[in-house]
Length: 258
Length: 325
Image (tube, rainbow over all chains, first blue to last red; front, top):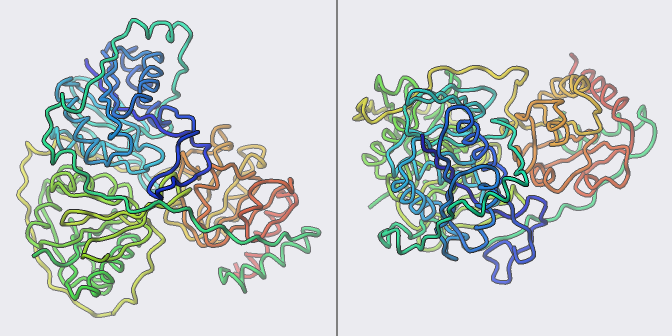
């Protein structure tokens, strides 16, 4: 079985947002990057399938040179091979562009299962998996907390509002991982050493043979702004018996909520 | 010439989603600016409120292959209806379903989709311009959709509901999409209600959350009690979820849910930057923490430095008294 896991290298969640001088991006100059947390669940799921029934796990990324580090982390976790489509223009590219790129790579890899994290933190879009599924004419199941694979079929438990949906379908398919799908393993020292022998193929954008329109963004960022800062609040002091009625009064009269 | 707004309406388990009516209200606003009509797409069953909240035309799509939800089937249906109505803009709520099949439809039509918007307008030059949160709300991106139809999903509980017009009717169009079994490779076969969760966080108006200060899973019953008294939903910080005290469906924050309630009450939550990202767009924030230096006090409108184990029951009682229950 062949499993492709598409991953993204993203700014760490602990960053405080700062806007670039041109006002069109978040400034990531001095920020540390990590494998997108949701992608870790995707990689782990692939590795668990590999442990149970055998599979070749290929991780795929699209971005600048630094994305190589993210793919190496996935190889250290246990993936067998990696492919990076390397181009600076892919760093903050739109879902349409990245989806077109990843779909083209997947069409060459021909996996039985394509896994993603449910969205990349930062862009928070969660569209690329659907774009890839549509381009490859594959079924999709998103925000999955449990996955079973057998006999060319999959059964996925999707988290929706106040409920779970069970989706059944055929492979190949695109599945996106939600927190709770599994507990991602840490790369062992042995795993880190082993990455040296694993293939990490770097491709150029041109080598994919995509048409210019396939790379044109359909969503154009005009500017990025920070939210307005909140005015300082009131600290209520005193015994619980005194403070609680004051709070309730405020919620009733000022906020008009109770 | 593309004109009009097409709004996708969700009515899961026979219950019309408020978030769909919010999208419909927003769509009505845009259409009125342009002097254009609004159409709604209902898959399976319609609802009179769709006309009351602004739809001029309602496409009711029915097909045996749509009896169960499938990303592919719903995507095909939307694309076919869009082909018939030729809107300038397609809207849906940023729900699990909306986020699942609308991006697929955008790709099929080779257009862009702005995901989970908090603002929407027609910009100079007739392009649709949206504002959407990025980095879980630490920042906001203003974006323009460069192709037609523009597509956007809207964050629940942000766009105001229009004033409904009782008795208002719309033209109903029964629509049977062209669908073939060979085009649909996966279906929903069952829906199970989540245990212990009553209200969806991302759609709730009042959220009561517990953090590390709760000290254990058994104490979350107290939080649920207050949430119930207020008619709200229960949330949690990552610390509480990772400690195994509460299911991650309740997690608020950068790797959990981003919420936009009118009131957010945080009990025993220190206010890590990732948690703040998930809730700082709440209209009113109340925080209770033993530690006067807790970062959460920087964003709270009202803070109490005190013991939550006495405060929560006291507040619950006061609320119940006021509500007369």
